Length: 236
Image (tube, rainbow, N blue to C red; front, top):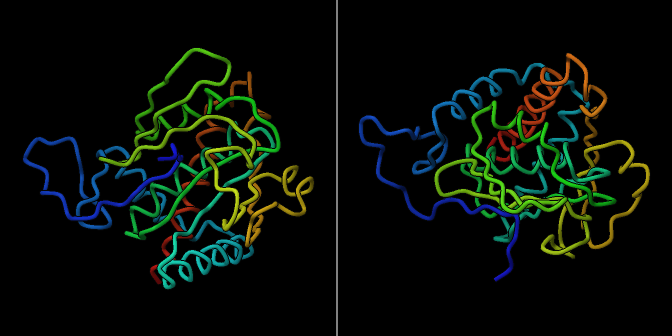
């Protein structure tokens, strides 16, 4: 079985958390997020009015893709692409997985890749952890793998790779361009059935400055907000 960076929604409702449990039910019955992540997601949902109209239009195009695939009984495969697969594409992949769960959208597979491979940047990882996401590192090489737990029973294995490398899907997927450089340098993405650009400013510009953490937190929140809006439109 391929070791995909994918998530699966629970097939049946889990029992409600017992008093004192560290899990909070949210979205689809049976989906449990820890309290910090649950609060973070609710806050982002309350910020949909911050999304510009043109970005909502691109997100609604993605929502239509997911909705059409779901209606046909087929998985919606979203591959988020940036230059190095180190920051924005990983943030998008992870928050898309959480957002699909939040709104109970089944058969969604989220992965990410770059036009080149580097490593999942520790600053982006730190921003996710500040939002409450649980992340465990596996290995000490230059491109380690990370187990990212977005909710109870929903984990992704994330590491940097080119968008066409395994375990990413080779055909029948939607390419989501999350940076302007990747968008410019990849006018076509082999194997994709749809290509949509939703570029984000690179938080890398703040690396080593006093604004570093706040810039990464801002980008993390923006991407989470927009992934939640995307899946809210699937269910609309």
